[in-house]
Amino acid sequence: MIILAATPIGNLGDASKRLIEVLENAEVIAAEDTRTTQRLLQALHVENRPRLIALHDHNEKHKAAELAALALDSDLVVLSDAGMPTVSDPGYGLVAEAVAQGVTVTAIPGPSAVLTALAISGLPTDRFSFEGFLPRKPGERRSTLRTLASEQRTMVFFESPSRLAGTLADMGAAFGEDRRIAVCRELTKFYEEVRRGTSAELVAWAEGGVKGEIVVVVEGATARDVTPEDALSQVQALVADGMRLKEAAAEVAAQTGHSSRELYQAALAAR
Image 1 (cartoon, one colour):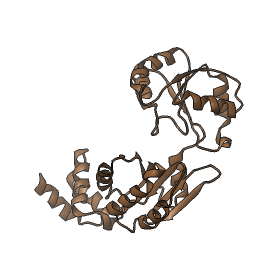
Image 2 (image 1 turned 45 degrees about the horizontal axis):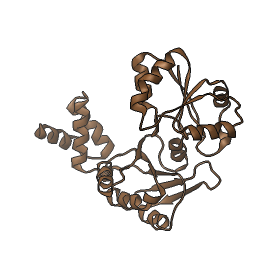
Image 3 (image 1 turned 180 degrees about the vertical axis):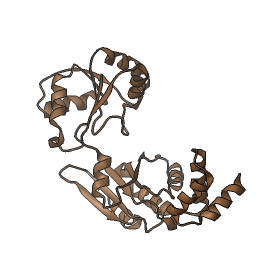
């Protein structure tokens, strides 16, 4: 069995009783960073010293089959440095291989920077998308943000302190200056901070220098932000997924405020 175990994202008090019990009894742990895992065991006063195997972005592709096979005979605990493995961290490749080999996969839920930031952002939580880290190169980052300009769900991003100001400025250019944004810093830690405002307001703050782990939560597009071209693309995507054109046009019209008849006609003309 493979056990994906969520670890604290900052405050050690968030370690669950179940997590500690699993660590106390683990024989093998696949860890994103074995040194970080050793420090975690010590901090949680876990006396068990299991076998530690490194599992990170650079070796997961080659290690997955071996570790999945190992988990057929004994439990394998998987840890990232913080939070839930596989969520913008190593583990997905291993889980995919385990599923292919028929290995049972379970999880110990726990701290999540994504959900914590979303919950305290003050932005809609009913529908959201996790976008992870944006590309490092400015041109690629701007291109990615432009593709998200019509996304109507609240969006959650990870970002590094050194790139935060540039990313916020690019968000303003791609999404519009009035889009609401929350920057969540050092979640669950002593210096936890949430800054809310427009991109321009937050850029001015970030340019002064920001430290720590950063999560950026961005308000989704409203109907007025969705162009006719974007609405047509949404209709075409729904049709491609098997929905009837008339129904797709009606659904997108209800979400965006565009005319159902015009979307229907435009989709027909584009065929």
